[in-house]
Image (cartoon, rainbow, N blue to C red; front, side, top):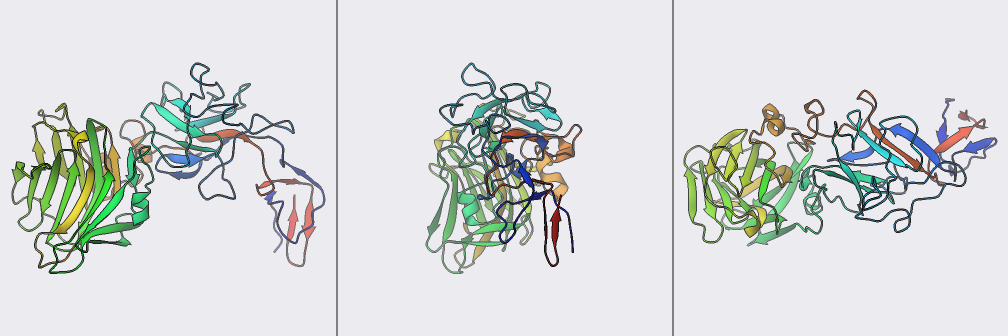
Length: 423
């Protein structure tokens, strides 16, 4: 059937065009549009048709004289993009309308420019974002070369769609390399999770005391942290452990007991018996907060919550940087198999909130929740980067369309046996 379109790829095969094209090989302005490829606080400016993850390289204006911004000439990685002191001033601080002279891009979150002091109040820094490394809570990182940005949130986050999605997570610390260790036949599986897919780890064969360990952060360098994840066991013999620095939390499913132990010698520092209550084939939310300065209510250094109810706590000394952050699962008895499913793992280098309700959400969970105080509860504690806000949110930028980039076709048409393109 005939239909109309105002955008079509110039390289569509088998079609001869008459008329004129606009927007090809000349600088093009986008004042505001929905951010693309949004995931865990990262997104892109448009989309690169030759890449599944990148956006469009920034340009310095409109028209035939426009040129791409070049790293080392127009800006430098690891320097500011919003101020000539310590960088260049090419970031537009408006929330809408035309760009100011010499300004080439903007990000608007929940109706306000991200550098607005009444909004996120962030600095904008140029970074190589070939991987999703996480900025501090005071900065947004942008890669003008690939049209990509990442806003503050967890230092580590994986939606656990596969094992590779944990080893190459959605968000990560620069230089951090997660890994997995199998002992005596430990293994992993992938299956249906709390959100989408999940990853299961543990002892797959009864009669063998095997285990699997996923090391999320081998060398944490912070003094406070919060860890959120969803877990499910397939048996009442599951024996998960959560290692964080010089302590680890141990769930002993048979007996329903919870322990906090020293990593160095497995010595017990806190015990709560008969209260764990992990039923097989049921998803539970686990939230662990730690503070070396004992700033958690009651002078605590550790608090562990299951479904937003505290299971166990500790008020002694801890050293988060004194060991790894990892998850281990085995079976409490070699006579049984055990599988622990994991989903939606997030780690912050801050306590954020002693109450996990913003993540637990009455059992429904919030897969994309990133930060309790930065982002609105109405958007599930995630950045709002589309036109559902007033004024519109999203991204603005200059770019130069290429032969594969969708461009506007004006006063041109093609008629075939059953289709017609026309402006």
